[in-house]
Length: 132
Image (cartoon, rainbow, N blue to C red; front, side):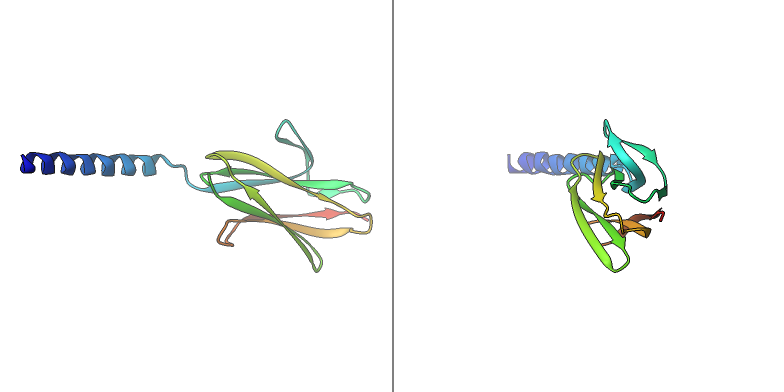
């Protein structure tokens, strides 16, 4: 009786291991897509570009995160010696999210936006300019 129970539990452990391996194999590779745009409508970037006119009210950093479900990413906005960090939760295996930076009229010149994972590793970055 004990031998049969041991065989069953060994079989169950082997089956669980197979399921775990199969699940891991189906997980998509973690990656992100970054688009800089004038706005977001229906969860999609609108008017993507890298140069915006002076007086632009805001710029949006739109991100599609693949394979990062259950984690937090950060959008790091940089202008000269200023930095803003925006944490964003990723809720599913293919998740769209964005942050918006409101601009002051005098903030012309080069900007960068970086996407970092929870460990601080850079996943993507891009730059844009506000023309004078």
